Amino acid sequence: MNEVMASAERFGHRQHIYLTWLAVRRYGTTPAIDLVSNGIQDVARYQGAPQKYNATVSRAWVELVGHHAKRSHVADFDTFAEQNSALLDKRLLTRFYRSSTLASDTARTGWVEPDLQSFPWQSPDTPPQHGSRTGS
Image (cartoon, rainbow, N blue to C red; front, side, top):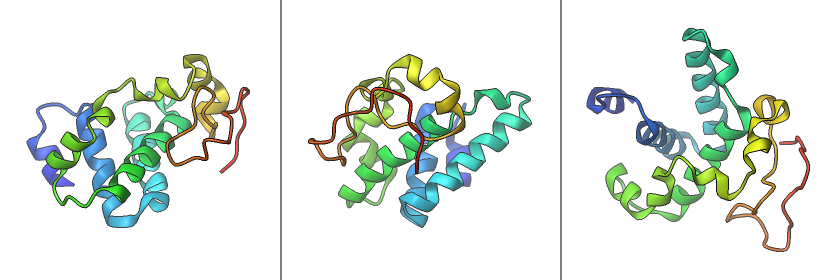
């Protein structure tokens, strides 16, 4: 993880995706959800802005990276990022969620299913949820 920090002039979206990719590759998607989410929460608290943490956003990004990492057999992040360039778009979650859904207290504190479009690994027969719903 130090290689991410050492090579970054600033810690932006690409670096978040890189750390997430490393966590997913090392521990698997499910354990990476807690690892990444806890890390982001800790940083937000340290910076005096715990309200910036969003549980749904954090988990959705880990699951998206995990989905693509599972389908990819490349061993270096630059190639992975090149092959999955949509992950480098900070607005990617707006394909799956309304902005109001992500801004809700429910999404900030727990998991909310996508309400615009299902994630790629979800059944196309499963309609997106049109109300906030928590679960695991």
